[in-house]
Image (cartoon, rainbow over all chains, first blue to last red):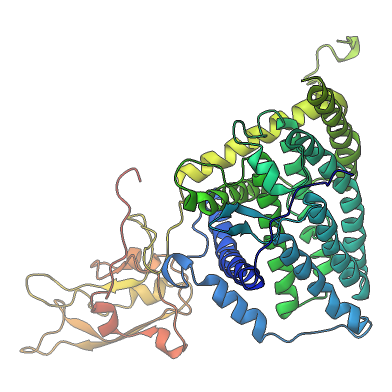
Length: 332
Length: 180
């Protein structure tokens, strides 16, 4: 039997530990900056400055926010289910961190693979781990013992089912063209041409589904501040609420990372080899900017419109994309 | 278009309806409109913020803006213009001005007239900034200034005495230029 992906490269354990520490440090350094970036950019999109009081250019704003959230009481409603209520915000954090492992920052350089781990199942790992986040959302929403939380969680579950399928199908075209499930191999396959060109439809579908997966506008139905008072987060306060927010940004980074690796040539870019992780980061941040731009532009879809878009537009389109790609890959 | 003969001479505007939603056309239009929206927000981003960062930067006021009152002196002699006639207090609808007049003593004149205001107080927590005092004054001794920052921690501190009204304001409020 042919292996799904050839990942025979093995490193020493201490290298793996150092790598994961570095990835943690970089990502958790970027996350707070992303919150400031988002708030500042949303402000500029609306003719205002955004946070600019705390520290130089408002860069210390996340510190102030976290300080506020930590110092708040960790409130739990009387009719909530204690263990599940606490587990709710933890599962998404776990899933986000796990998903970071497969984001490729570069190929093997000097005996070190510039990625967390190159798993043979590759992109399937992303789907498997990413779906855990919705368990946290569902558990948190359900165990809060509040109707708004439950509604938000239900919407989240329905949204996940609707968009996960389209997302997977959108990536299938890339997997066929790359001939591997491993993200590293797929990036290597884009040496001549980034997959965003032949797979443009797939890219659009993936990004749209990515907005839905990360609960961002225009698909922030689970949160829906206007109707559901923050949906599944309604009963959460303090740092538990903060970790839900943290996860939202982490998921944005992960989805951007996967999109950059699958469609935008990952670490490919001019310059010497040590620039590879920086190229990857730049592409990810570029996609993060798109997330913010879309949030500043589009209003929330109505629920039936959301479902209609997922099942009637994205799913057939993704299927068609897969079929056409399959025919082209086989014939050429 | 259907003709409605009974509506012929009436001002009836036909309701303009957009294309039916849904279908391939609907998806195409939605995509186009989305791009248009993205273009709009990006244009706002490029225009840059129009915020006035208030404590550092103040909104300029118009020349006729009615802010905190000022009492005036003659520039050449340094004598107060106010003669303590209390017309401003009589004109005040909010009854916030208190004037106590006194006779000028030769040798140590305070005002240009026969009498002067020994006490001149304006209770700014009551003042409605109507400007009637300014109109009532026969000597242009009191005018409405341009300052609008009058918040304080204590109500008593909002009773402005003659010395406070005569003094120059610590910070000048910016004035709006022509056509601004």
